[in-house]
Length: 132
Length: 278
Image (cartoon, rainbow over all chains, first blue to last red; front, side, top):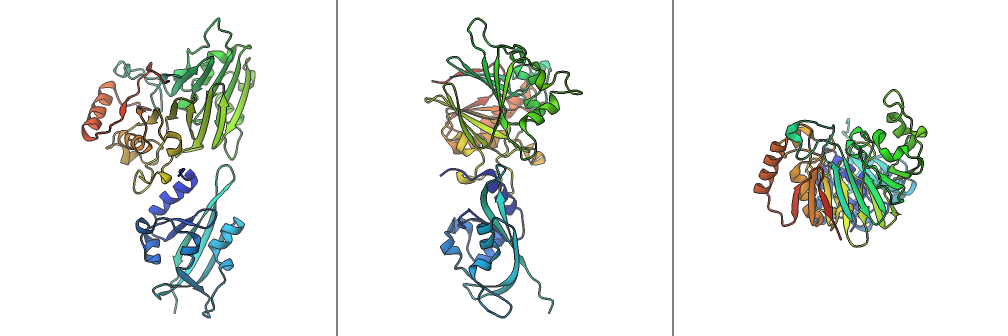
């Protein structure tokens, strides 16, 4: 398989150095890398799972609003970024497969390469400290 | 395909007699076949090069990996530029801001240089490249962006029988975990895979590299590991640090060979070296 574009490779190298969970997808939304902090969120290790098809990794969480209503996938930052190739940000709740509920903010941005082409997307999860 | 190395020093030309074996000229290699000549990079090694007389040859293609000074400083002294009969093509990486002409003109214009690019008497054509494929005479060439500060490409040159890969400035080990062994995540891999000959950045020793991380260059160890992962047949370690004497380079290379046991052929690149590929 050909190597990824260096813009993708450099995003991974950066993610390797960060303490925030970072997820990198290709243009179709397939998860091609997640860093060690993200492994804690997913409950799996990248070394073990490797890349994940969008159908697989999109079912690992349920997303809810403050009232506990399920959020449609199209409203999620990463999905919107892959679709629109624009940055997106949103705060919501996630429920993992293990039943753990956590309030997070997600920032997603598109990777637009030197040649101006869309290469993939990055999502960063930020834990929200509840003031209450 | 004949590959001739005219400059393998990194960063700045050196003139010390203690560096005369590996040479002091900065990046330049000549690739020739039939009646076509490619000049890889325009470091100080390109001075004194000229087209062979009496052959009718008047075309030269200069392939620039990037526009750092040690890769373009020979351009002002490139003899074929000053012959109006010559047809010269420069291929260089595109930038998101300025054109190749504008960026080259920063050097080839006063106060840095007395002659401007537009004043050169030859017929000059500039080509901006990205992740590109193109053909020049008997050669098919692929360029790919690689990890190095600023827009920088490496080249994979094929004549249909052999492959020469040229990546003189490259830091594939940049990152928290060094060189990634999953080749999908390896900058430059597509250029180097199964190459018959690879000229690759090896500016530092493995002891020096940690304090130079992010400067865009590789250690000898990482260059050899990169070549191994790519299945290269013959590796030339190049872009020698301007502070390394011949004796120091020999010592560092001997240490590398003592610690690492690779099955492919690898050696230090030296100015004047010629390699013939089928």
